[in-house]
Image (cartoon, rainbow, N blue to C red; front, side, top):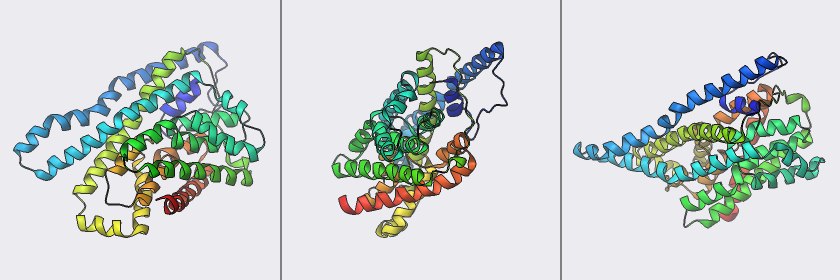
Length: 356
């Protein structure tokens, strides 16, 4: 993993480094790398506290909530804590694997195993996404490097969509979240894989390289691989953990704040349920290793509508749209986002109708 990847993942969404930065001066190059890692270390010092603080506070005050005799508040805290604690081990495992890949697996490996012809490259890149698991945030800069290194853009985008959606960690977490619904695991894999291949094929047919405005340049500051792993895994854990907490809060709040009659009306209308879960997937931006536990927390909705949530979230959400704009350009993001969302929803609905 190069310094560029760290900048793209760690900087605010939409920020990229361009040729305006002159790295020809060797001393400036060294100072730049040192400053970056110091900044990352400073952010990470407080990041984990932000992740675990809501959990610690909620668990600590649950006893006091009983004294207030507020049944709804105690139930909300129970739902919130249960979703978070169930999902956290898979989140940690996912970002650990992603960090190891970032530090020790070069995108050149993907380039070597992906054929040059798009008709073969797209499905091969989808399979590579299964073999090289990673979170959504890590797959975007990797896809950018693949494009830079000569991989067909359609294959790079297929890998971008497949890696966080069909990897073993995601599938196992889904099986744990839905222990009696093994068919949902199969449906998630098939719908996500089909969506990735469909979008990759669409891009291969479009073949519009003018939309990919790459502004990244790889620079190697000699960072220790284990330091790269720690930086990437810690940053992704804090980043994804924040969205997990947000998703757990949203699931608990929907169950208690929204009147049961309203939820029942939406749950009884398949179209409304599908649209609601597609909207929530984009809005909540939950890490793919944890989103199944949030979906499992809303049992009154159909499996097909919840499958939409599980298929859409890993391929397109607010944080990914911002990252796509930063890495590939705003024009690309404006076209790629609605196409990916539409394909993901259609794929999930069709597979859900057949398998669920």
